[in-house]
Image: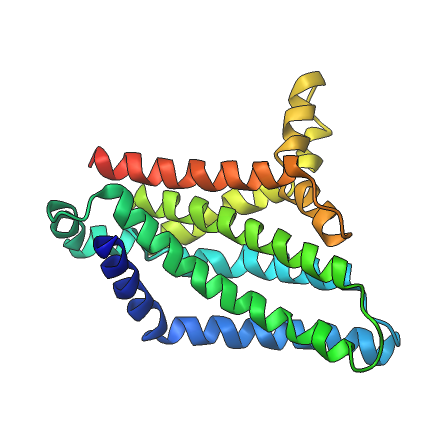
Length: 233
């Protein structure tokens, strides 16, 4: 546990001492605020479903910037071997980096909570939808981070890590569209792997255990791939 806390503290310092974290938070808040205000003042109503999808879209674009340096930078700078030669261990290293990145996503989700709270001054938002949407975005963000860290573990170039991560995200997001062109059971698998399809129930106020299990499985798979890659360095 002490080793995990050391890795987590190191990564938190690396994330929040660098300007990238504050740029991501500022851009995220600005775009979410624009969407909220545009709906509120132009349509006289706010769709919480639209806010969830806006946040999900922004996570698709920002998470690669968060995860691209996690292991790729360590590999390119030569510090990865030093870290892995210490008693830290591969899984502890991946877990610490994952939790530090997830903390930044939690900060971004806290920004989104400002809008339902603001809306509560003017109307009575559906808090069930707010909470289910937040849970869905948290699981969604955790899965994206795990995938991003797995990709970062496979390369030493941060730009390549970011580009490949975003490509994987978009492929999974549009999987149901690709499923239209696949035959039979392959189409069913493609639709089942769609991040869009899996997030929709959360956005509409419904939580299915199958969707929770999907995001948790994707998170575990990403962390396992990253750990396995480090073990085979």
